Length: 298
Image (cartoon, rainbow, N blue to C red; front, side, top):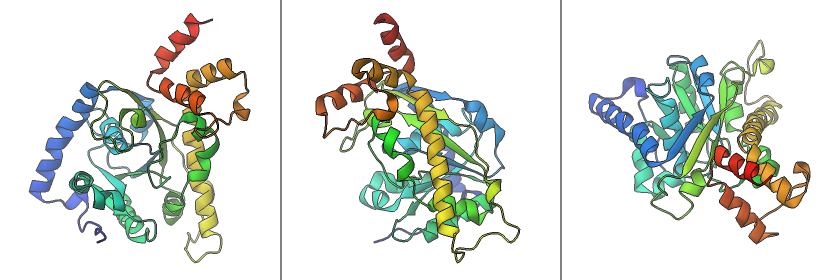
């Protein structure tokens, strides 16, 4: 049975719903920072779009933890947002009662075979000057930076691009890269690894005013979907660029070990399982720890 889109936005929640949300909002960001080694980088980009200004946050999706981690980075008092809509995979919400409960925290389901209701609800949220969290990949992908180097841009779905065109290019997008969430809670696991290193790295906001048209955009336009795909790929490209910055020491170790230029790296679990696993283990460490390892092995 498909889940329904909520009838109310956070601006019109009931008193009990607001009270529950406020209670979780007080606890969750602090719990995240106690349980994990959690860092948020470039928070000043968030400050450019405070509460009351509509914005879309886009991120690479690696774990069921991601929603909680990004919310903990963005929601007051650590970020500047009071509420944030969460576009979540409908099948995950159906299959897991815990994730179904996310609807009380602002989540709503999206289904790949019919994303229109979720996109329409997202438009409603943005028109009410709220923020929305969206994973352009559409689902969890337990990738490493090695995989993302080659695949991240091509994994973008058209949904977020369609939203941008619906607003004629005038909604800002803030790309974000997450490190370590899959290592903290991989597929099939229930309890996250305590004190795992996780970081959220925020990129410079994107404005797509170059796609604005005097008459706006319609889905019946022959170039609507191709342009939406182009926008989504631009967003994923920004996330990839942030990944290269965040994972610079990870790639330095790889280049030193393999003596292969970055653009020629093509190591997968299938082709080089032991090497791939060695590099995957590096993701448990922070950039400072990896830099110390590099400096100590000069």
